[in-house]
Amino acid sequence: MDQGREGKGRKNHQSSSYGVRVATGRYGATMSSAGDAITSLYSARAAHAPPPPNQPPDFPVRVNFDQGLPDPRYFPVERLKRHLVATLDEHGRDALRYFSTGGASEMQYGYLGLRDELARWMARRDGRELDPEGIALVNGSTDGLALAVNAFLGPGDGAVVESATYPHTKRYMAMTGAVVRSAALDDDGLDIGSVEEQLVRLRADGLRPKLIYTIPTFHAPTGTVMPLERRRALIALAAKWQVMVLEDNCYYEFAYGTPPPPTLLALDESGFVLQSDSFSKYVAPGLRMAWLAGHPAAIKAIVRVRQDFAVSQLLARALERYLAAGDFDAHLVALRGHYREKRDATRDALWKYARPWVRFREPAGGFYFWLELDERVDWDRARAALADQGIAFRPADRFADDDHGHGKADERRFVRISPIQVPLEDIEPGIAALGAALAAAVASPDGQRRER
Image (spheres, rainbow, N blue to C red):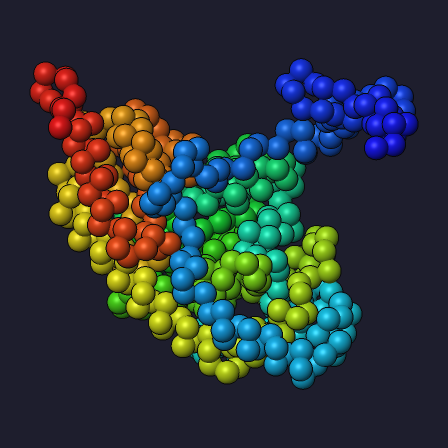
């Protein structure tokens, strides 16, 4: 070995207190001290950002009822591969550019061909025409939700969300400097009277209400479906107050029986509904392809605040072919069948093993069961026992910190179950373990825990 090089290497490295060798720069700064210096340069937004709300379980997971993920066993790999290869064969280098025949605006709105195909697909579903200028392609639905929030909210503004909701959206809202208030949920979803109460409060506090966020169809986490008349009432309220409604529609296609009411966007005549939807749940999340749809003026705000050059031309072209060939609709039919089977298996197992300790409504679609625990159950004890077995569930406090009972230790306690990514053969044993853990964590009349 080159002794000079070896000696130089030793001189330029030293061990930190935690046993990791760190580089020493020419001015004597270590990587550790450089990290401290870099941290001091963070913007206020980076320095004070709350931690991500959907941290995975902190134990080795064997059966994962925790995360609302699609089942990778049903990703249409071969169909997508065929359309990707055909796209490259037909379009070659043109499929790898920033934009195509749609012009440079595709760097803001996304590939026009896929937007056209989506407009036709949504028109068939909703029974009304949609202008492709009213669609923007985004890099996953979470990106779209963040763009929508940043397009309409800032300091001095107000927003209303459901009392239990997708936590990322609420986090994005807070990071804009807007004030976020929670409205009550009931068995039919968002309570419209409660929404108006929060709008009144925001205005009374000197804030300008601008945005209402809702998941009206197969709600996350509760699984509720907003009835038709309530949907119309929400749209009328938005028009009255001149505020946007951000409709998160990513579960709409997962009805396991009677189709849900029309989407808010389908019912909207005012232009105040902005809809978020995605291929992540319907096809595969690794595509990172989603869209926002609404009035062209609303979409213009979206593309003004985005800081990328839209989406992959290659993937957008392949998905255009996937829709046009009818593969997307056929895949959704098959997926509904698979997921309905998992819904049914979960329902049956809950009735068989956990019914004395939980109350729930069978979800008509979507990914989630929302369990209300018997007040005698010590959930922390049950959860620890399940963690020891590698079985993960998601407690309600991951979705809410509000005044309506969800997620508060001294109120009703709830747990969300997502069986969709769990192999069918693991559902019954996993729910059986849940039932046993709940039973073992129930207090007897003398206040002692039952032992099994």
